[in-house]
Image 1 (spheres, one colour):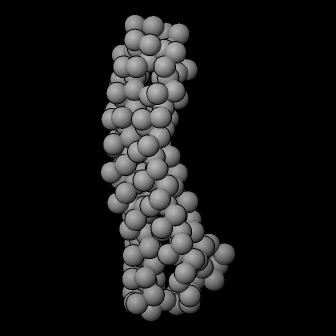
Image 2 (image 1 turned 180 degrees about the horizontal axis):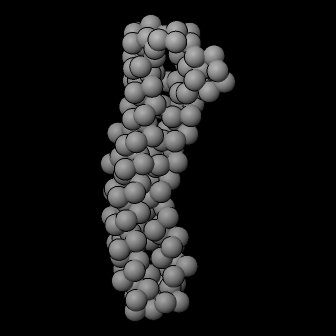
Length: 159
């Protein structure tokens, strides 16, 4: 079976939806993990609190993976009925992947930096962990909005 240009463009969108937020999450989790290691070096009992903050930037990668799966399902790659997409249809799918791809990349990194700053709160005042989580969660809001935009755009495309 030969792949059409539309199918290729749609698959490129799925790949970017998974790849870019995954990179952002990996970078963000790494940034937060570096700070967490410093805190735990001083007080090993703070491992659980720092792990919670470190895990937060990983959600962008999950959102990207979810969007990639929805794209693959929508175009029939999952399920064995790969639709013969026109170039225009492929571009529509590609465009729908852009919100989570780009926002996921940047917000994963930004959330990692915010979570790393929250490690300072945990280091000095562990009872104030919720404040560090709140700061990091505000960054998460934009990833959730981008996920919602991508999914709604995908559901609006008719083949």
